[in-house]
Image 1: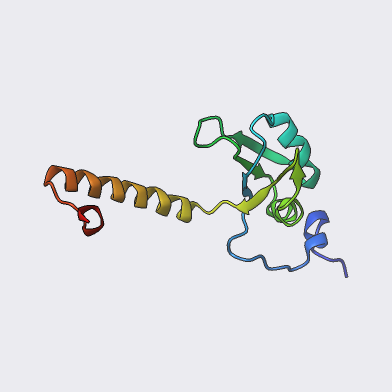
Image 2: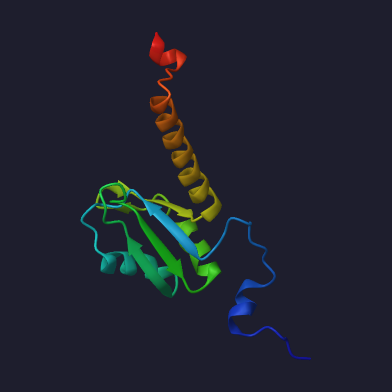
Length: 130
């Protein structure tokens, strides 16, 4: 009787991944002068990459999004590259979680709206009044 698993499936078995695992990896603490090609070299060792997006704005410098073709390759990269030293900097490699990013954006927007309302109605908080 032949196994129904083919190539890639057989190397993984029936491993269940935690819910936060996905193909998109968020990288922080990168050297500012690192190139996309260097990121491809580092992260490509763990599997085929679909895309690399390098932060190029003042508030996103030193960060990147790395998208793998395969979720298991992304997991392998996170497992091996979190804490990896690149040019004297230790990488922080996490799974991208859209809900957390959206939550952060929403919170920033709410804080900004609150500050605008306070200015409009000349309201001071207790901390500011003291």
